[in-house]
Image (cartoon, rainbow, N blue to C red; front, side):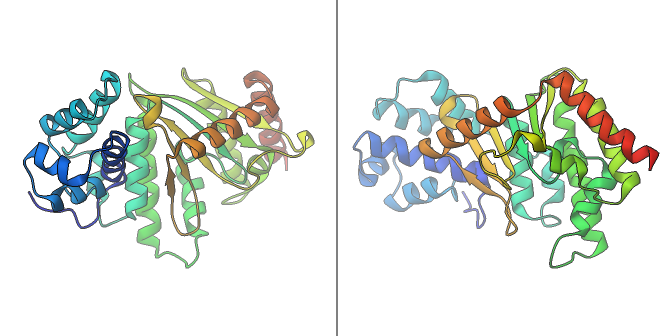
Length: 286
C-alpha cells in the first residue's frame, strides 16, 4: 500500500487517535506491530497518517487496547474507510490542501458553530463577496487562483443544502456586518443573502453588537465542528499562513466555552435579523 506524501487532516487525525488509544492502553509500538502482523515502521506510518489502516486491523487494535466505546470505534472505522473520491478532490493541486481539509471537515461534521469578527462565515458568503475576500490576500493571488478558490467555496456551501445537512450557527460580530468587502453593492447583497440563509432550517445567525463590549478571542475566526462522537470534535482556526486544526481536550473545552460566551452575548435570531436588515437598508439608501 503506497505512502501518502501529504496526508489529509482526516488521515492525520485518525493516526492521532490510533496512537492515543495505543498509548492509553500502555501498548508499545512493537507490541501493536506484532498484534497487527506488520513491521514496527508501519505502525509509525499509520499513526502519522501516511499509511492506511484497514477496518479489521483498527477494530483488532481497539479490542486489545480495551476500548469499549463502540460508537467511537465505529466512527474511527468510518474514518479509515473514507478514501473514496469526493468532490473536493477535483480541486486537489488547484487550491491549498488546507482548504480541502476544511471542506472534508464540514462534510463530515454533525453540527458546526462558527464565530467571525471581520467577515461573514465562508459557508454563508456570496460569490462576489468571496471574490473580494480572496483578492485582498497577500501576496496577491493571480485572478485564476482567486476564481478557483471562490468556486471551491461555493461547492463547500452545498453541505448546508443536503437532506442530512449539519446544524450551523454563525456568530457574527457587528464589525463583520459593516465591513464592505467588494464595495457597498456587494456588501448589501451579502447582508441580504445572510438574511435569506438565516431563515433556512438548521441555520442560525447571531449578531454581537459593538455595544456589547469585550468578547473572547477577539479577532479570531473559529469553526467548531462536532464529530460523530465528542472525542472527534475539531476546532479550525483561520490564520494568514492557512488553517490550523486543534483537537486536544483542553483546546476543545476552551473553544466550546469561547463560543458559548459569544452566544450569550449575541442578540436572539429574530433581533439579529432585524439588526442585519437595518444595516443592509442603510447601504441601500446611501
